[in-house]
Length: 138
Image 1 (cartoon, rainbow, N blue to C red):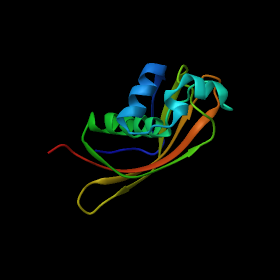
Image 2: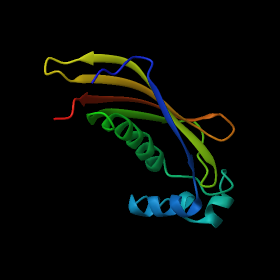
Image 3: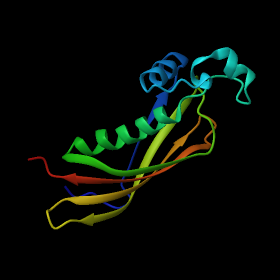
């Protein structure tokens, strides 16, 4: 498979209130900050924010999409730290960088990643680490 330290990949997403609400409901996250414009407007955020679960899902999905284009991949561990809200009406950029690759005896690679979500101001909204295992397609 040959994953290399320093390899990077990213995508830009346009968040919408409709998608934020739909995701929140599907994840059974009924926090009014994700669903109720009035409650969100009255909060310290001033408007709807995206569920942290949604940002986590997008970040993890990006690793799967990237690595399964050339082999098999499964997530082993992900950790996220939320620094700023992601608003339900902004454009964000998700990115990952490979920081370590360790081959296994079975011919697979355990890949350590550092990720982040930047808001449209270029500020880090979410910082992440991840570990996945990748292998050649059978």
